Length: 264
Image (cartoon, rainbow, N blue to C red; front, side, top):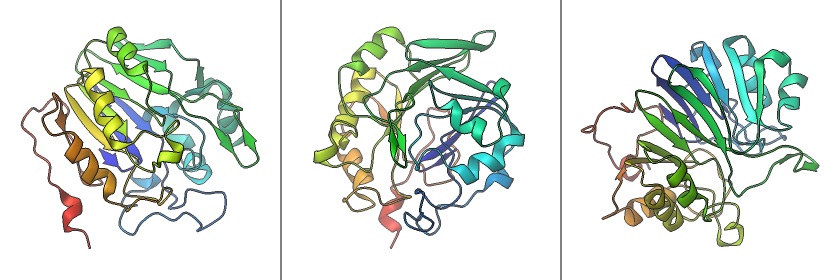
């Protein structure tokens, strides 16, 4: 299930929540970067018990104090980059709940099910601090399905390398939104997202990081329009679920609407 910046996965009985922000604000200043009306259709109360909560990096649109604090009793483990565990400890998590990882590391969830942490070309920081923790992408490998999450980051050669390391990517969940040519080194443009997905040799792709907050200068629906255009005739299937829509990962015939065209 996808919520624009946030997504929840249930694979082979394992429940995974990624970069949850349910407070309606992506800033240390209240009501300064507000979620669009209708995008916060779920809350912490709606979440089940979570086996693994993954954090790509500690920017406010991915790591939210209010959300994370309220989720603590529901989360078995947090997986984050080196240094990011300090946030969770400060906010009431036990050390035993926190798994910090470097790039190129992995751990086994259960037999045949593994989570790996990989690089991305981004940055981290909250308030007046920067680069105090590591930013990540993730590869989730199970007997049932394999999922790659890009995290935030500019385009580079890593996608070709990831494809060599993980030759079967059923789903790529790719950052696509809040970009600008001035920020190209840390946020991919839509045409680069299409290229990266092709280089990953992914079967299916879901664009995320759009349609919830205004952090870039582009119109809110431009990322979806652009990735739809650039994905034409590409070897992967583009999936554009509306916020809150369930995606059946093992289905090859689920269809998706261009829902943003109907939003006024």
